[in-house]
Amino acid sequence: MSEYRISGIWINQNQVITHYAFHTVGVNSTSKAIKTTKSDAIAMLEKSGNTAVTWVWNYKTSKWGIGETVEVVHGENGKYLRSNRDDRLTDNLRHLVDFDWITQ
Image 1 (cartoon, rainbow, N blue to C red):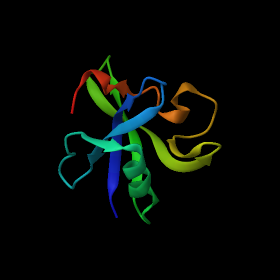
Image 2 (image 1 turned 90 degrees about the horizontal axis):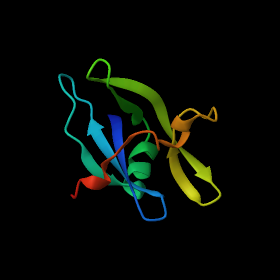
Image 3 (image 1 turned 30 degrees about the vertical axis):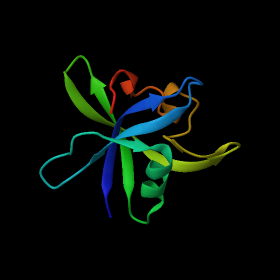
Image 4 (image 1 turned 30 degrees about the horizontal axis):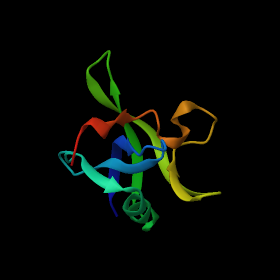
């Protein structure tokens, strides 16, 4: 069983999320971001016992904060990651930091 935090995304020219910034939560620390493909992220969260939450930067406190629970859902165009479904901007993780300016 693993616990993850997702702090950012990479999107393609069609504005579709292609990668996520995944962090592994340890006993005493959280790892640096690892650029993870959408398919690998889905596979990681489909493993029994694995969980993920969004990790959101708070500009007022200059700290990371735990956001919403992330789950794998089946949509019209296949599987994708989504946070709590409530018709808010945070539903499909597009509110996370856009790491497109970082090349990895």
